[in-house]
Image (cartoon, rainbow, N blue to C red; front, side, top):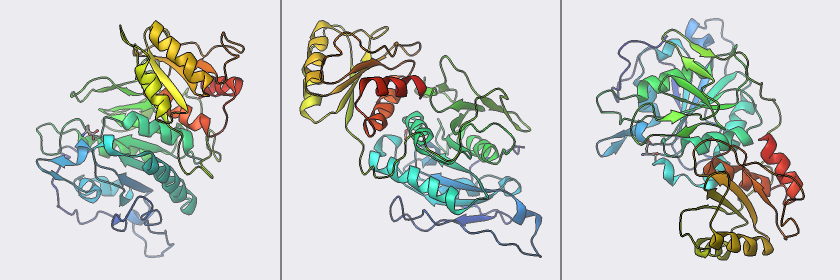
Amino acid sequence: MRPRGAGLVAGVVLPALALAAGPPAAGPLAAAHGHPVAHTDPAATAADTLPRVHVLATGGTISNTEGDRLTGEELVQSLPGVEEVARITVEQFSNVASGAITLEQWLAMARGIDRHFADDVELAGVVVTSGTDTMEETAYFLDLTLAHCRPVVVTGAMRRANMLGADGPANLFDAIQLAVHGDGPRVGAVVLMNDLVFPAREVTKVHTSRPDAFAAPGAGPVGMADPDSIVLRSDLPERACGTAPFDLTGVDELPRVDVIHTHLGADGALIRAAVDAGAQGIVMASVGRGGSTPGQRAALAEAREQGVVVVRSSRTGAGRVPVGRTPESGEDARAPMLGAGDLNPQKARILLMLALTRTRDGEELREIFRRW
Ligand code: DAS
């Protein structure tokens, strides 16, 4: 149960809190083995038998106060009662706004989390604290790249830690509760914000400032933080365990994929610039069900002749751009063009980056976009 008055009191160490900080942040991989190993101890107290949760702190508004950033350890220490929920280790992965997270850090984060799960079979789950601006992207990337199926809960805050009504402490407390929620369906990576649990694939930020800034258009939440428990829908498809949808073995860098907006009067200049910059894929934030301007269509045809894969998603915010069939008109071009289904442009970019590590074949890409 979430305690009343869980608020942020930075620096207060709760006496019973079984908190073990990871090593100092010397880089994304540095703390990958920083959590303690469980021991069977005849003198073990009840606290010693609590499930273990690893909190990976990356920064964002949940950490922000006026002119300062709290550490992950300070965030966890500010949660009264959490010592009755889990034994927590903390890793300060970064402490930046979420827009500053790099693709290299994503790779390191996914590998580090999978290593934690592999090293510690009793680790119940991982909580990632993140800025909210790109939280949906981090959650989807992790969902597509983690081999383990234990919960990975991404959370943050819309209000800074020292603001009236700060939402970070409750979100973090609920995320830890969800991470130890052992009897629900295996949902993979999820976002927990404002009492609601959203699937990584569908969740998106829909407001710039309000605490209810997240939604999953067309899907809805998969669970909620009730005052006394976490409740997950029981009819969810279970995520497979053991293999990642996209195995990162041997992937040192992700291919460049750019997102380009369609709007009235848009010409092909930005598409040509993306190709010149080395894009291997372009995701169009198209109008409606995948439309773009005549100037953009001409530039996209040129891009495909140069081997650049094109995915059409929609700037609309909900609904589908059909993935399409093979052969589609223009399939004789050097690179395929397909629709993103119901993925929004930023999610379609992530899927295309990962898909391009595996294939450039039109039908295989369509199969990937139908499935993931
Ligand atoms: N500071 C922004 C970010 O890091 C906003 C936030 O955290 O909510 O994404």
